[in-house]
Amino acid sequence: MTTALDDIAAPAPGTFSRRLRFADPSMILWLALIAVLIFLIASPMVRLVISSFQEPETQRLTLHNYIDAYGSARHLQALWNTLELGGGVALLAGIFGVPLAWAISRTDMPAKGFVRLMVFGAFIIPPYLGAIGWILLAGPNAGWLNKLWMAVTGAPHGVFNIYSMTGLIVVIAVTSFPYVFVFTSSALDLVSSEMEDAANILGAGTLRTTFRVTLPLVLPAIVGGLIISFLEAIALFGAPALIALPARFHVVSTQLWQFFEYPVRVEEAAAYAMPLLLITLLMFWLQRTVLGRRGYTTVSGKGGERRVIKLGPWRFVMLGYALLVCTLSVFLPMLVLVQAAFARAWGRGFSLDNLTLNNFRYVLFEQTQAQNAIINTFVYSGAAAFGAITLSLAIAYVVTRKLVPWSNVLAFLCMAPFVIPGIILAIGFYAAYAPPPLALYGTATILILAYTTRFLPIAYTSSAAGMRSINPEMEEAVRILGGGRLTAIRRVLAPLLKRSIAGAWILVFIPATRELSSAIFLVGPNTRVISVMLFDLSEEGNFEVLATLGLILLAVTLVIAAIGFKAIGRDFMVRNS
Image 1 (cartoon, one colour):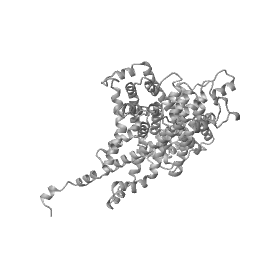
Image 2 (cartoon, one colour):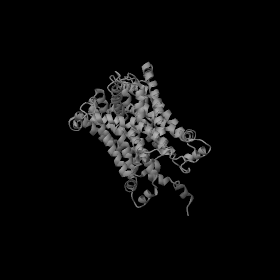
Image 3 (tube, one colour):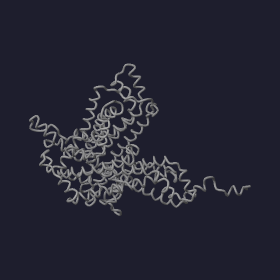
Image 4 (cartoon, helix red, strand yellow):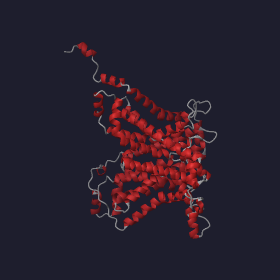
């Protein structure tokens, strides 16, 4: 029998459990990891914004950085060029990606598996490496396509010029159209054939049905893919630097790089980066809004049967178009890169006396800088992948188990780098951690931290999905038997999540090995990575060594991806992305 005094003294329901939860020694670990998350993401972004309003010497607040950044016609033209580039790439990526997605998902076009493989190849080829391949193909007069044109027509000069806005749009579009392809094909795979059959019964042909029924149903997904292609284009540094600078025009990313030439103007760069960040945030908001309107019952996964459209003889026309896109994105640039890698002099053409393995021996065994770049690339990328996985797992655990108040804020912070272009993130890291007392500029630490932050959303997406799939009762059973929370994580959660963790590690490692936009701003003389070295070699015109180093990077990427396909499953990249 309880008394009134007992009722007063008794804790409120749940109070004891909350006290016990916060008394758990593991809570210190969670709080420490939350502090690391804030250090990685919030600190650089806050510092970036503050720097844009500070005078370089006095640190007083001012608007002069914005006046200097946008008071120049050249700087405004670079911003306009960026928007033109993004719009052109999105349009061309749609022209490439949507027909391929429709043909593979809905028709009887032959060689679908091969085309899918080529789309995957286009996805893993770094844009700057594809740009180098197209420089060898369509460089004025010296490019292979121009040489072929002059040989066939007898013209005194070539017809192609990669050093132009059109050339830059094509080069980026052939590596970014897989975004449109993936978004569109995923949506098409969910659309049943019922409405298409109804249109056919009413007399509509295949083409009219496709344009009036099928594609409008997946229009939100198409728009989502176009927006991602747009954002990819405006945030790139490598391809624009290789093509736009020799063509004597700037985009925002190359103009930001100019601010880091001596004397370094970090504050002005921070101010100039703000519109790019705002455009990115606006486009991501638009993408979420558009994709959030997928209220069609035919795209709910509960539709009827999806029947293959018979194209008849037109299926070979569709295959021809698919092979054309594959040729532009994979075959041609890879062909000339392989030729350059095995050539004594790439300009001498395809001949037995021009073949050599000396380029590989030079890169792997003689060129110290190349060896260091290879080691740095894989060590930094591996460390960043482990860091991103560890942090994302911890934050996902805290969020899903609601161990701290306002846990949704932590989820937002983990996903925030997804909407921050790598080049802007690098400037934020430079502003926050390059000056004393940390003075991390040019060190391995700042590169690993930047990579970890840049690709944290990939790791968190996989970690959160895996964590939600595991019932907390399994952990509670361990704790009832006397084990602590960390024991439950080590003995229960980790084994259950190992496949998801492995897939996420690969998905962070692969893009980290080819990251250039952030690395170009943060590397030092002793911390150069492959992507930066490739950029430096392109400026020197050393295409034989460049192609060799690029092929080594691609070979490692393919091996890692193959391991993922073999050990985790062929769809691990879809499930974890």
